[in-house]
Image: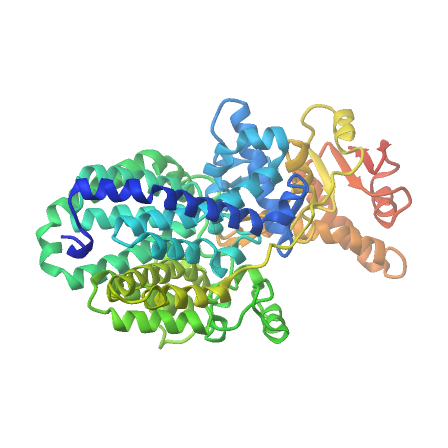
Length: 586
């Protein structure tokens, strides 16, 4: 079975001739994608080692920590351990339940070691935009889209608001290079294009790569791929049934290859230490709204102050504002789907796009289909608004295939302006999606004396950094990521199970990080005038010390500051001071 119309199929000789003729255009398109990605991240490249995106500092610092963790593992000659006490000592964290970005972290480990984790993250971000666009461009070409329509489709996907906004701090969602390739390999298996075993091998390799890049995006990709396969099967049922044997062998090969690579990691995730269940978030708080499809955010070139204010006042924040496509593009997509409905590629991708956008609305109402699916295993972990990422890929395919058909049906003798008007209309609709360069600001600088203080404390000390790092105070994680010190950090910003095994941010239930982070400020404000609370706070701190058993306490503060006074009351005079760092030995 072929999804490519006979009008665009030809002999291998003709295909090679066209490839040679169009190679210059393809290199130009890939170069434009890279230039676009560099322009979008230009404010980061001014000083890539110490500038990060503005808007989600906690997650940026978390990913910097993961990049350092991967690099330290590689430099010691082994892959990263999937359970580590380098964070949240002594209990540790399970990296498979966190957005650990393992594959990019390992591949970029030389950059991290030489130039720092933030440089690696900026490289990953830039390649995420350009690579995602290039990935879909290549896939669209493989399924018959002509060069420039496929180029616009790739640009729509790689630089969509969904990926731009995800790039503010959600690197595992923004690096969307693999999803088009995964769906391409799966479609080749189902439609009988090429060797089923060879396609299965590629599908298994790509799936495993996505497991170690971002599991949530893999789940979204699987849902999108299933929808697309169902739409194709509904259009070509006999051909699909006829090829079931090849499909089975291809999918079996993919499963074997994927599990051979990622099976141990998945076992650690679901049966190893620190396993968890449920989502750490209220998933239906992360949904698209009807207005979000047509209300531009302030980080787009074409927006109004009112629309920017409306988006900024939303509950989920810009990193989760993913659905916007704008009225012009929505109109073009719907009109194209109706006009070229007979083409199986347009029909299948349009149906997939529509269903994914409906899924992004969440399941707060029983009238929405996601309401009936959100309780299923694995799917319960998904934040519905993130369906917009794969929905934009489907929208890009609708645009590319329909635009190619519109251009191919133009009269031969017509003037160039008349022949190319569909291309102009599509380009005009995409103008409303052009992003501004990403906002950037400085990362938390390493305090003067940080590394010298840890050198004086001796090798690998169990150090309690105060305030204890968590979502509102992640700076210690950033300093650990930039310097590698300390080797183990107590507390942290991450996801782990509470005492009942429910996934929760910051691991409150077992590390007491939240309570300890508050204890110092409580003591300072309550030490005088509310004596009845002193015993309670002392008890809480003693429980914390008994759990963590730190060998030292480090505080980044100045002498006689509020924090210094509180810690001195608790632990006596500091053992030493190195510039901005005070240290107490216990």
